Image 1 (cartoon, rainbow, N blue to C red):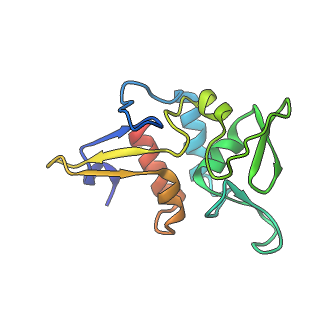
Image 2: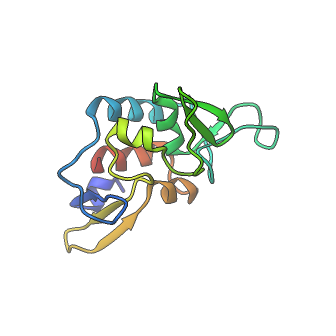
Length: 150
């Protein structure tokens, strides 16, 4: 079932859980992120922004937020799950967006936290990281949530 069919409203929250529905991502960044997620060029991984190495094969795997980190021209990968600003400033918090990418993209939070409301106003709050890591949501499905929520 498509996100829009299941829920009547989808509202992004900030890191404090406050509604951020009036603030949206930069539309160009959002379009680039959606294109990248739907391109088939990224293999989906779990538990980290990006995974490389012998355990998973030769092609890196990304979570949905890792794809956004990869799209950002202000960051570069320095190891499996860590990006750094071009000036060397690091994101040492593994599985969440760097502050640089959060600011650049206009994301209201670092995990993709959203609240989904159905016609009966039943609340379902999710993080994009949880959707990605559940193994039940493809990049295409996550892109639908991003398109609707942000």
